Image 1 (cartoon, rainbow, N blue to C red):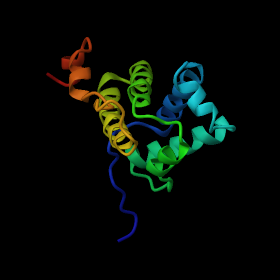
Image 2: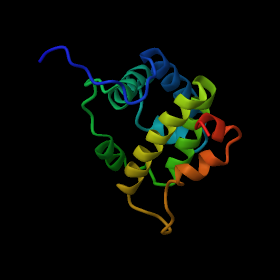
Image 3: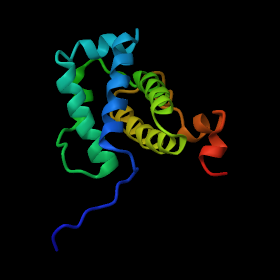
Length: 151
């Protein structure tokens, strides 16, 4: 069997992925909490954004174009903490809402929150607090969330 392809997990385009990644990292660089964390590890932003775009193509479009290990990278960094993930996800959600139609933004956000929760649980926990809020609570509080979900 040749030529079989899996349908995308979330029907975004490669251009949409690239745009979301680009806008997101522009915001990360300006963020007082996340900017210094990334600046300590990323010297070449173009290369980093290309790598992260491949990560999302793999996760969303099921393309086999990423072979990294995000858990290992975050654990080895030494300065990534579980409390960074809610900030990361808040910025990411804002970019998704700005750049994508509501249904695509919500679907991608749900996946990002699951990934973020998994990555944060792989790091040493602080204060016994859950590192990432439950996505369902966050989206249900947003204006128009019921409409975007088809309710």
